[in-house]
Length: 518
Image (cartoon, rainbow, N blue to C red; front, side, top):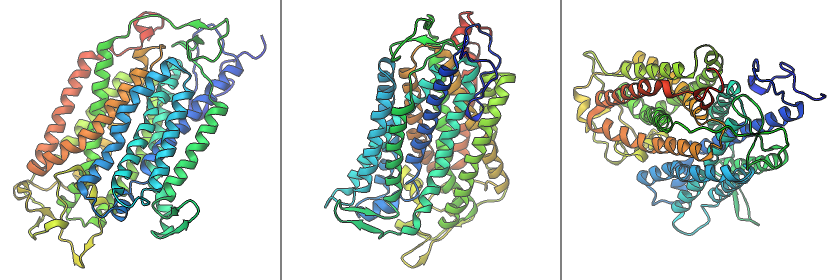
């Protein structure tokens, strides 16, 4: 029979090899190519979604101050959180939509919302008042558009076999990480345009260092829509890789089989949601606390904190890409559950190392800093340190551990070697936990439509990104790093215990019902 897919003929992008197939039904070359073209388009969609989030993170505070003088750090916290809130609400909705309609529909609508959000962001300077609320709406809409993450992951899970799943999920996470890394780089490239820029009077569009990144993001979103319309096709295979028929298919052939039946293990589903929540929670904690921690412990100026921590976070992004590649290879030897357990243990060690010890104490910032200090009490006030100038009102800002934080007087300093070692370990453990949670989740759910379930998983991650900064800012400000990191270690221990309890249940649906050997 001409055109049949022969094992080993071709390997997909980024190493998504199907491996040694154990089933008898061969996949046609045409179907195979179409399936992987569609998956690769979703890799691009994930990358562009991440770029859209991060491309303005370095400029959002100065832009907010420029358009509305009434905006303060507390409002900045709401602007930052609105993205995650929007994504948390939209993910289950887009996921449900994708279960019963072609996946093109929620993908195109969500990307269109993101394009509209970016255009609104570029015009928030136009209204005569309440400009900050327009920015709040723009970021919230961008978060709603990012709810398509659930559709991207559910499509990929449904269009890959068990042998292909881990590699495909790793590639999605890799594209997401690259988007987060390159977004700020794109922003920096537009800095030469300056704050004034040029104005297109006909449409009242101001093109400057603040608006150019979102206009680029809007253009890429339109290009993404065109590619989805032109290339994406509906594909679904079972855990063995055989084509399945479901309501999302535009057309079904007679040789496609029905989705295998079997009840999903809801205990495993809930457990993985908790595991994923904790993984994103602890990384949100780390991202939030890194700036105030280094300024308190090492007396870094704001300028130094922005530079050094920016380098650290960029290095973590590169490290994550390397980890995703390594995990794809390692999972074939020891399995996803063992890797997830190892990732949690590494994260626990990373935070345990951060616990203060010894007889050396941080430099105390005795001066009264009034309103230009870096309080650690709100999410917005912590984020503010990333944008404020190290010089305000013509005076050099004092450095050291803020005296109004009583713990500064009795808490030992966290040595720089401790901090850097912790950074490396957390940078290894977090991407492992993130990827393995998604991969195990998709396998536990089986070949049935996963849109709603992926929506809830994405929503739990969004909730973690909201609660993590709130938790750590309050605990750190009142009780210091010893209590803060001890509580995080306790949370990770409880999570490891949960994983141990449900360890045997975290298996693929087809393995659970004996259709495939693990």
